[in-house]
Image (cartoon, rainbow over all chains, first blue to last red):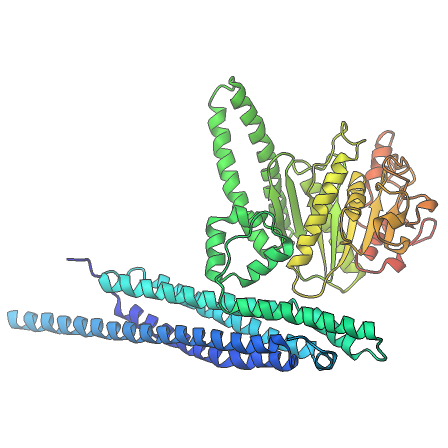
Amino acid sequence: MPELYVEPHILAGAGRTLAAERSVLSDIADALVPAFHVIAAALPGSRTAHAAGHTATTLTAAVRAAAAELDHLSRAVTAAARDYQVVEQTTAAGIERDNRAAT
Amino acid sequence: MTADVRMAERWDAWSCGNGVSRLFGLADDLDGAYQRLAVTTAGLVDWRGPAAERARGRMQVAAGTVSGLAGLVRRAADAVRVGLPGIAEAARLATAPAQTFAEAADAVAVATSVDARIATGLATAGAAPAPAIPPGGATPAEVARWWIALPPHLRHQLMEHQAGALGRLVGLPADVRDEANRRQLTRLLARLRAERDRLAGSLLTVPLQLSRATLLKSMLTIAESVERTLAMLADRRLSARLLTLDLIDAGRVAIGLGDVDRAQNVAVVVPGMGDDAGHGVPGTVGRAADLLAEASRQSVQSTAVVAWVGYAAPGWRQVTFPTRARTGGRVLTADLAALAAARTGEPAHVTLVGHSYGSTVVGAAMQAGPRRADDLVLLGSPGVLADRVGELGLSGRHTYVGEAALDPIADTGVFGADPGDRGFGATRIRVDAAPGRPWPDAIIAAHSHYFDPGSESLRNIARVVVGRGSDVTRPGATS
């Protein structure tokens, strides 16, 4: 049987960090297109303006995909922390009941 | 698509630069997200079990992805940043009044070329993976751009595992070179000391062992000299960056005092005979520190000074030959190109300060490639491999010569005309009389007191360094 060790409160903290960074990445994705648009607007009619639009789309999609992955991870880690806490609390309550029954 | 003049007329480099700054800011935000994710993943090290392995693995991949995105956004920003001067030039040409047909054609050519270059850079920035460490022949500009686009997790990995290779790359920011070279110094010192102790316990009778011991001693001399000098600078609370560390052969060391990547003025002090990496580091750094202190008294502008012990300075037997000056000049030119490439802001006002044979190296550097310095200060010079100031690529108003009255080297003109002669065309600066010493110390003192703190000579060098060359005092004038 594999070794198991977990501190649920640290895991819960990690879940919160992942959620916060997901939010940061979403904000960055929102800001990328306007930033590239400033460049495109400063160079009207140029190939650069065209390439800036294309690059903005590609990078924004990639940042959103990374944000989605962080979202999945955040949910999974937060759920795991909650499950471990439940196991811990249930086990502690069971031991307490056994103690009372024995005395 | 070909640019036309009316199109380029409406180009706005300033706004474009604004967009670039925003992209660099977003790349920094992605860097921050990566750092926090990496710390969080590392904080889960005690979590054990099958779920832990999977979750940590995915979190590491996610952090690496975010780091990679930071690199891509920074690369896109840099692709446009390097084109900003071209955009400004294209707009200026397009809006120039009363153009001839040829001028209009030039404007179109410039606009089309810069536009194509940026568009190609942007297109690759959105998709291409970060390239591996640049090959040895990469130019400083190529290295600088590679580093800018490198995701932070790869930067971290390289610093951890290939600090030696990183420190040897020319074109990296000074802080990066400093960290890499200091790590390398620590590593090399430990290895060399261990080997010295091992050899000390054996009889050095085998020729191979003897030659290894000699090499070891030479490398340790340089490394320990650098170690002591950095400790001295830390004690004096001087901000220092170990820009170059090479222990092979005569060795090469360069230590920057101040912020060489951002300072408005950068001076490079080039020492002369006997001041090779094994013997010249503390002295050259001391002179650089005195010059930096005087420069800060002469101007409120920011200044940095590089103590460049970067060539095989000759001993008595080689000093009458220009070979080492020519070789050193080529290396100095390359190092100046590296300093310029690492700057992301305005170019610095660069002054080369050469003492004795170091001035010959400076002369060789100025003739070795594109102009890399705005002003020269030649002190106690035996010649700069030129007969007239014009051969150095600068006018007499930007070439300054200091010669002490009793300096026996300054009037020799061994390597071309005496730079202090009127016919050479440089500007003479006032230097103090050497401190009174009995013969023969007076002669040595006359050749080696140009950087004395509080001296008029040091004040004049500093005036040139901070761009106030017109304020230097001339021989015969009172300060």
